[in-house]
Amino acid sequence: MSNCTRYLGLDVHAETISAAVAEGRGRIRSLGKFPNRPDAVRKLIEKLGVPRRLKVCYEAGPTGYALYWQLTKLGVDCEVIAPSLIPKKAGDKVKTDRRDAEKLAQSYQAGDLTPVWVPSPEHEALRDLVRQRAAAKADESRAKHRLVKHLLRRGLRSPDEDGAWTHPWWRWVQSLKFDHEAQQVALADCIAEVLHMGERLARLDKAIDRLVESAPAHMRAVIEALQALRGVAKLTAVTIVTEVGTFKRFRLPTEMMGYTGFVPSEYSSGGRESKGRCTRAGNAHLRHVLGEAAWHARHRPWLNLRMKKVLPTLPAGVAEIAWKAQERLHRKFTKMTYCRKPAGKVAAAVARELVGFIWAIGTLVESQQANKTHSRAA
Image (cartoon, rainbow, N blue to C red; front, side, top):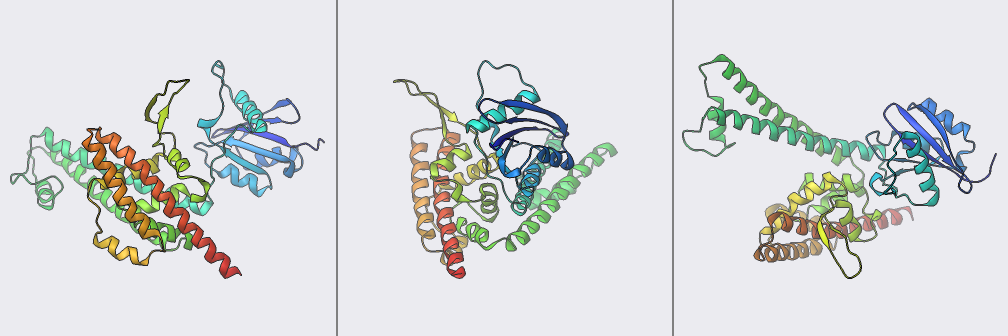
């Protein structure tokens, strides 16, 4: 048995896994295909010898991190790779599971792959709940649009010209009667779906509040500190923390900006510099909530009642960063709007700078929490 480190590349699918191993110089061999089952994975690892001399990688995808957790329990060094950052040859037009596994093993041995941050099972559970709430909100919006369009097709409008989804408008909708039973049943179903989605959102909001209260102290501290920023309420702060994980994974705020996908694309060569639209290469859930929060910068800096209550309870330095963020982001929003920049471009630019302030607060609070932990241990 060879004493050199073996680099195992796995092309993972829902039912099967294709494996290839690289060892020594230029020695890459396929290990075939086997079922994506824990017993089959364990037998493969036992077949390859000592786990401490084995390094395994596979692409991040819909199969999640179950395979990662299984391999780490077996004592194997495993990394989950960012698919968009895997090197690819422009002329390579053949793609099979076997070739993908061999390319992973070869690139992993060469050090050309970029791993992603893997959350703990507890952290991923909370993140799944927050994402489920976002999906429920999207379902509610679709249900509301369906009801409004149902009324529009019938030419129905509130007699008092009340705005949509106000209390008088909603009472008027629920009191509507049609001559045909089919239309009445369709309207009742639309109303029931909107009410059901509202109950679903309320249930998920209560669950998130309950689980955040029982979260680790350092996570709760970051969530509370981020709410000092304008446009970042509790749900947005929880989304940011669950999607980012730990802010220490980014050495600079520009790295976190790239992770959100708000940085402009660029294709420059020689004396020619060309920049395009945002890359959108990153976490879409995080990008959505940051884009929504950026619109609050259009208002002049001020402290509302919620922020006046929150700021005195936060760690030192957080309030200064939050106020600086309000001034800078409002100035940028106003300036770009005055220059007649498109609204979407203004919001993206403001969201990109907002990421920098979020990174500053996150790293500050995490450092303070780490110091408290060390002082207690001492």
